[in-house]
Image (cartoon, rainbow, N blue to C red):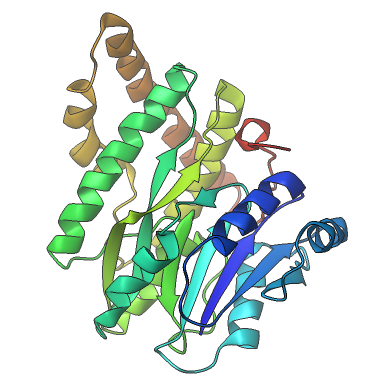
Length: 300
């Protein structure tokens, strides 16, 4: 049994596309799609647009994404490790073979988590698109290396899968794509990268949205220092410098792109400083889209 959980936030058209991309998969196993959203009108909209009993709706109680996921894990867990939970978002959509590709590594009983490959769908040629291109390209390389070396790495919240029956809840005051793989790792399971399981993402296209999204993400990951201080970190300022600084400066194909990379360095440093400052004043609290990122909404 495969449970595909789609977490959304009042984005009816985007969520519809996300669900349709899942229904278009060639899934041989029994499966169920569960859309999680705090807005009841999304359920009404989906029921009008999709006449398929495999699609279900769960009203998010509004206590954060992690809280909702924990409820669903406990409600739908079969207790059988051969069954799978797949997690994705309503503002992204997956490639035609994504589900089959992401469940392949689970043939190895030692694998507990599998992450997909984010691919940006922007095509404006903007600076922010270029920044995302560099980041996604390097993340792809690092995940391939760590997966081949059978080392720990964090997953992508846009698309990742876990074995059922291993964990039924996780700390909610951090990012689920970091803490869940770590909990599996502590139990002796490996992490795998399914680079053919592509998930298409719209990235921020202006400074305000980019800044808010990245600061929120950093704060969630940095809170891991309190929750799991012994966790091998793959998303941190140190690792960004170690894995990305030299890589980024070698990517420009024009003088314009070279200046964009220099701006990227300062922008990344600034958002880390901002996130660290805010964490000193107030601890991170899980909140699903507590800061609206308008430019990442692909259709709504």
